[in-house]
Image (cartoon, helix red, strand yellow):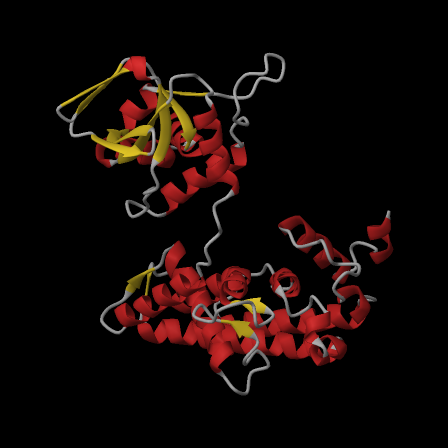
Length: 372
């Protein structure tokens, strides 16, 4: 494999090369050092199917606008490398240190029966190039490769995307002031973020000064704008789709209407929650209810209350859901103590955990069964 315009860089005693590879060339020239417990070789876990399928869906869902900008990290032995005048020649396959799930996602698109996935793969072949950083490592599974793998996967600090979400929503509002905006995964997320901003900035809202905004440092408030917006996405999406009546674009007026309807529904459902468990609101720091766990559970419970029948009026749909939601709160035997930090529901902060708590609130599971 010969690569033009490669760049050589030096970090301490280590040499690296930076270059780009087209999709097909990347897929044809890689290997992964998977761990073999019997031979005690390799260091990487097998690829996780749900992970690379999620990446594949991300690529398909966004049309031609989705990108994978992070570099593939690979390694090769010095004996297999020749570098002259910015021309890099590699005589063996690249050993992938970081990036196997992105590669497997592309292969999944290539091998899928769904024509939409195949079309996305064909687009990647025609138009995508991948940045690659190549480590010079003389031994397969060398300490350099393994240490790099560990550093990437364990020492990177998660960066909050809350501020980016707010800025992206602000940009969409500016765009709506000029023209209609295409409905997409990002625009639905932006609309959910808009709902949360409306709640956070309304002094009459029970959520006023209780949502951590993107430019606020530290964890001063019970729940972040990102967590709140993610938990509202399905509800906001349903309201938006009804508001635009099947159109694929949304206007500024329609976006404002959808956000206002959702905001009012969220305010009402949380007033009902406050009435059911007032202790959690009097001492919010002692309970999980206003945190990510409680917010995710309550919004998922509300989603489950939306009748399956077709609606053309989003306000009627939200009203019917609110009526069912209040009935479930009135019937449940869950008390405030279950929401206390360190009590029954602590540790259920996962998609599966949210579903279990919703089933309990709906009377489909016994609260006592959590102790089994």
